[in-house]
Image (cartoon, rainbow, N blue to C red):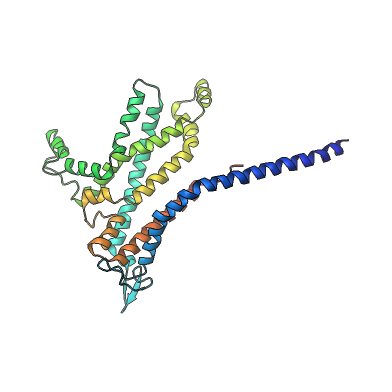
Length: 323
C-alpha cells in the first residue's frame, strides 16, 4: 500500500517541479526583458568608450590629429629600444601615482568605514531629532566633489585660510602651514577632505543594514545580560558584513578613480598625483593619446583585479541562489 502511495506521489512532485522550473524560466525571461534596455544604453555610453580607449592604447595616436595614427602593439605599455626600456610601466611617475592612489584608498576607506559604523550606530539609536540629524549628516556627501575640494582648498590656504588662522589663534602652530603644497601633508589633507565628504555615504549604507536586523536577537542578549560591546562584535558585525563589504567595494572603486579631489587640492604635483591625474597629464598636457589610453587601461585592469580579489576574499556570490 505504501508503495502505491509513493508511486502516486511521484507524478505530483514531478509536475510541481516542472511548474516551478517553468515559472523560474518565465521570471528570468521577464527580468532580461526589463534590464535589456539598460544594458544596451550602458554598453553604448560605457562599453564603447572603454573599447576605444583600449584600442588607442595600442597606437601612437596624438591629440593634434586623431585620424593619423598607426598600430604599435604594446609599446605604450612596455618596449625595449637599444637596450633601454620605454613605456608606461617603466615610468617612475606612473608607479608613484599607483602607490599614491592605493595608499589614499586604503587609508581613506579604512577611516570612513570605522567612522561610518560609529555614525550609523548613533543614528540607529532612538533620540530626539534623529530624523533631522540623518538629513544633516548627508550634506557633505550631497555637495559636488569639485565644490567641496575648492572650498577646502580656500580654507586650507596658507595665507588666507581659516584653518591656519584658527590653529594660530589657539597656539597649535607657530607659522602658517602649506597643507596642499607640502608633499608631507598634501596626501593626508586629501584623505581628510575625502573622509569629511564620504563618511556619511558609508554611514547611510551601514544604517540601512542595521535597520534590517531582527530585534528579537538584541532583546534576548539584553535578557541574558550580554554587554553591548560583545553584542556588537558577536551579533551586529557578522550580520551586517555583506552590506559592509558592498559599501567598502563601492567606496574603494570611487577612491581608486579619484581625480577631481587631488587635482583641485594639489594640482599637477608628481608627489601627490593619482593614477587618473597621471593619465590626464599624458592625454591632455602632453597630448599623447596612446600613452594616456595605456595608463587609463591599466587603471581599469587594476580596479577590476582588486574588485575580484575583494569579492573572493569576502566570499560574496552576487546574484546566486543561496539554496
